[in-house]
Amino acid sequence: MLDDVQLLYYDSATWKVVFRSHRDSKYYDEEERDAGAVFDDMYNSMKDRAFFLNNHLNHTDGANGVHVHQRLAGCELLNSDKPGLLQTWDAFDGQNVEEFTFDIEKNDIQMKKPWMIMWNQMTHLRVKYMYEHVYHPVCIKTLRRYLKMEKNNVMRKVKPRVRLTRKMLTDSQGLKISCLATGFYPRHINLTLFRDGQPVDDNQITGGEILPNGDGTYQMRKSLVISEEELREGHKYNCTMKQLNLDNKLDIIFDVTESDPGSFSHSIIFSLLLCLAALIITALIIWRKRHSAGQGSVSQGKYSPTSYEYTQFYEI
Image 1 (cartoon, rainbow, N blue to C red):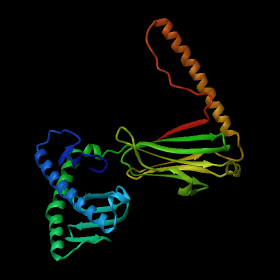
Image 2 (tube, one colour):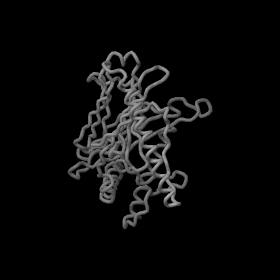
Image 3 (cartoon, rainbow, N blue to C red):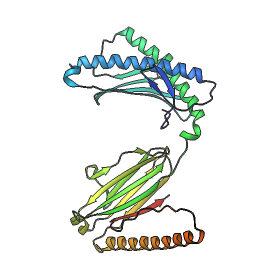
Image 4 (tube, rainbow, N blue to C red):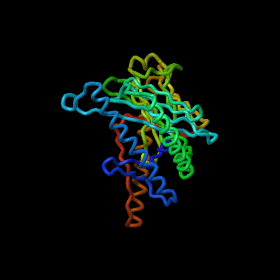
């Protein structure tokens, strides 16, 4: 991965590196060799570590089922084109994270390993040598090369479109408000729901995960259910979106007030009437075109007059 862009993956069945895109690169052979060597060593290291942890924690395949060992490893390139840290994080069955950091500037290794294997001075020197002379230089070289090749892709900045949805709940007579930011890149974004100027507790909110769109951008949605009693109390609700890589911020106020409890239903009825009128006009235009030209086909979206959902779109 280069930031959010996947470049290649390792097939453990064939022990080969598979590139996501077929580029005409003069470095292809070198890239395949470097990546293959790192993946081979990483894969074998993870197998050994998983085997050790499985026995160390007294797990057996028959009694405890499948166990998962995960590793996230990567290096960073600072804004000054200066090599940064190389780090790995390990987890076994989703917990007890191990950390490993190599600092090339300090020529130092920092470890957090609660499940320590036999580790002596020779092992320390061997691991340090591998990180200093193999992993770190290969990672930084590869990072610089791919950054140059994929710069326009990974450095792009796309502003989000924000969709505000209010939906009446017929069972509880409450209201569900949702704030969706979509179509943005990179993925770093803050989306916050406020009640009377204070952030709503996370345990009251559904959603909040960063999800990929099919076009390489991302989306995030947060929703909150407001009870009928809370609606009568007249709280003020708003949604704030801030894209961390761009200097932009959007604050949207939900029109939910006690002074006019019927305003939302009135706006829904008015919106439905507008939609119905637009559909009638569209149908008349289509009818006239078909009868005058005698050919052509028009696709028409679905419309449900019983919908209680009202949507607004915002763009920065």
